[in-house]
Image (cartoon, rainbow, N blue to C red; front, side, top):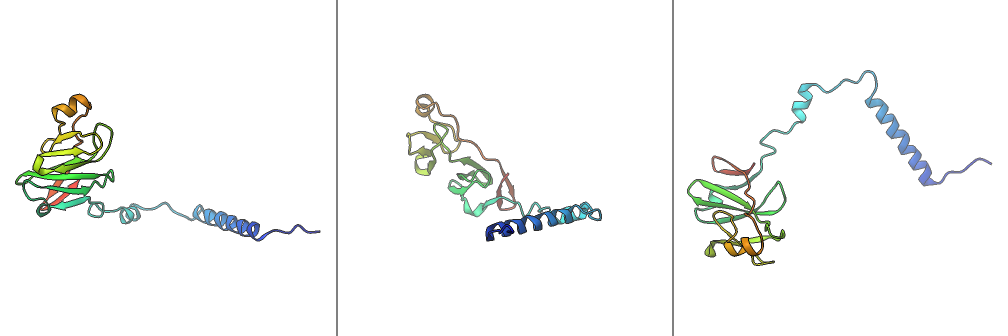
Length: 153
């Protein structure tokens, strides 16, 4: 009696045959390697990979602008302490990794988890935080400014 196959076995066998046929077509003797022109077309331009997070008008002098760091996916803060000077800090508390928030009126970043406080302008922990929680400065985020566009490097 001939062996009978179930629907799943037939579909799996068919898919394997198609995959093998597709692979052999890719490696056929007439196939050529991609040219530099082909690669240039498929390579994204720097404009397409730009990581613009704000414009200068989003961050008035003395203010704080919250954004998502495209490199880490974490919240971050962009500041303009003086006209044309932009700095950014990660929101990750250096004590235990909680997220800090910005309090411009108090000139500080504060961690809700453990009470850590960091200077808004420098990202440095205050004396109590540095000593009791052994925290270090918030991580600075590298920026580039082109015209009014502010990007994460």
